[in-house]
Image (cartoon, rainbow, N blue to C red):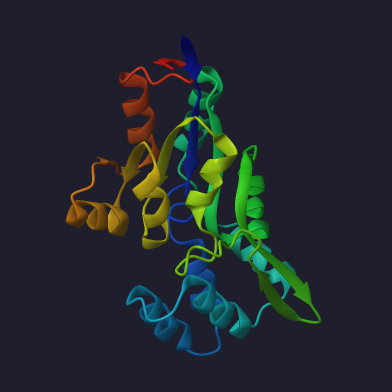
Length: 224
């Protein structure tokens, strides 16, 4: 019997939708010491998990909510994110952001650019008595590395053809499990070293053109 298979596209936020690393800029500007860099290096060397790294880094920040959100709203985004949204809408593709950044930051940046937010799966940041308090509702007990194991969100689109778009080491888990991957920077280097297939991109315009040229559709015939 022939059935129809849907498509879902999950996309990273920092340095993929945004032009630059938003969270990195926050840490650089509002950390009272350079210890955040030491923790970042330890994370990159697999000495600590993403969750441990973020707890340490966020716990040291000295910034109030208003100042933080005003700062991140200055972040430029890739103008072709809107084109990607239009492509997803036209093809009926489910689109979601999967990020190790924090929900309030992601939403603040998108709102500043008047961009409609798709589903967002991110860490959570609250402000309590002048402190920033991170929490990690999407942590997976089966993943020792990630704070928000982005691959777990594939289950929300069970049976779909999964496209993943990302740039960094926090994108390894989803990139290793997706059906189709667009990668740049550290993620592209990692996948190339592992001999894993991916499509290289420089910006989201490349992604949109590639998907459009391949005739990627939300509904595709498969056999069952």
